[in-house]
Amino acid sequence: MSETARPPSVDALARSLAGTGLPQPMLVEVARAAIAAGDPASALRRAAAAGRSLLQPVINATGVLLHTNLGRAPVPGASDGTRYSNLELDLEDGRRGSRQDRAGPLLARACGAERALVVNNCAAAVVLVLAALARDRDVVVSRGELVEIGGGFRIPEVLAQSGARLVEVGTTNRTRLADYRAAVQAPGADVGLVLKVHASNYRISGFTETVEVAALAGVGPPVVADIGSGLLDAATPWLADGPPPWLANEPAARQTLAGGAALVTFSGDKLLGGPQAGIVAGRADLVAACASHPLARALRPGSLVLGALQETALAYLRRDGAAIGFWRMATLPVADLEARAAALGVGRPVACASVTGGGTLPGVEIPSAGVAVEGDHRAALRARTPPVVARVAEGVTVCDLRTVAPADDAELSAALAAVARP
Image (tube, helix red, strand yellow):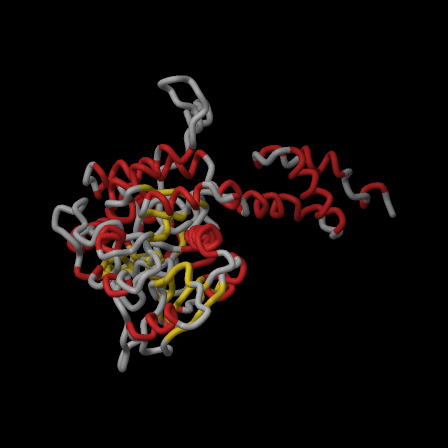
């Protein structure tokens, strides 16, 4: 092989990529991969791909408000790292405190609970409740509520991992109060909890029957309601115009507890509009039992989650729905979106139908507006900085403005103008 044909050294190739902004160890890895592939010229492209694989802001133009792939509810960005927080410090006496003393009490106040506990996510909340309150005991669940959530996690498997014993009652489409009573009163039964699970990501219609929490509360054992999506109060006092029609029949924490549930579990990053988290709220003694269980430490969230959740809870208590990204986007008037679509100056304005997403409110659509550009330009839009995530319908790229921040309209307009050029 001639001298000119020799590939560059890993170090030299890595140094040539310094302008990409990636740290040296990543550049070395990229350089090695390019040389090993016999294509040193691909190093720059590989470095760009490595940079794009990192977490970064994107423009969500899909119309899916709680887009799981995009982090679900938008929350304020992290701090610049120059400040600490009193995560586990009592500022009054200077002693060690609990990380559960901030966001939890605020959320409890917002939904009318005696106490609340914050964990990693809603699945973790359910596991913790079952392990702490019903290990080696029976948990009664309607067959119509043995749901599967994203990632293949199923309620029967969650119960098994918690150490509780599943007792199924009723049928897929019809479960009566008598079914629950029979399970509780059966010879040898040792029922620790009655679990009611909200079918948040699907609907059963037709010849159906379910039992409400108020009726279940009279059966005997504590009722735990996994309401999933995290609507705090059906009255939505944080919205000036009251609850939007698309929220009809969605269970809310305050009303579920008032109806007789001992505990509710729900997500922080769905209809609550906060960061990914799970909340256990309700009777103080039952929440305390969950908080003292060994799993509670393994499932606890960090300061960034708790800080964002605290800000979300404070916005609810101020009745400031505009400060919560999900509610601000979800309640934007269509006329405002139409005006923004016309002002973009690119593509053609179109009517859209946004959805909440994230496994919430299946089948519900929210009227919206956006712009459309002929052709499938999703890959080109994702390749931009910041990336734009859009959808395609019948060969047309559609950008729904309900999920685009007004501050990003100029970026979106430039991105569409670039891909729309002949």
